[in-house]
Image (cartoon, rainbow, N blue to C red):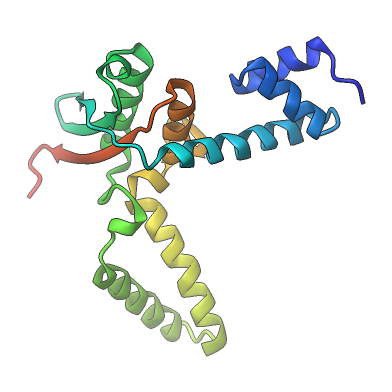
Length: 197
């Protein structure tokens, strides 16, 4: 199938990718717009992963306060001060601070979750399932599924993004990596809530 300028324009509007990237993805997908978007996403993740080893020592700390009752503060790092001052980077940091307030994560990424926390959750799930009379062969699979969901809920980067639940927070960070051409790292965060112990 011949790739037209209108098709490239449409894919650019959907993905924000460059003209040549859109053209290449459409050619690889033989004009299938949905498949072309998938190809761009796969290629984008590969590009983002290549940048992950680069040192990110610049950045900013952003805070978001919700109605004076809850606040989130995040440290987001990038490679240069130039990128840290761009409106897009500032918006990313602000969105991440909002995410912290709204979704109340406990850890930045899944690797940060201590093994004892996961084991405690697994034991709780096993006990619940055994009490329900579930078969032993099913319990292991169900526990694995519940633990995956638990990690998604408590890890900031794994959570569904509050402004676009079709994407995870990590997807949003990776999109920013591609736009800025620099490694971006969510270093840490803190969440405060009024009268919280």
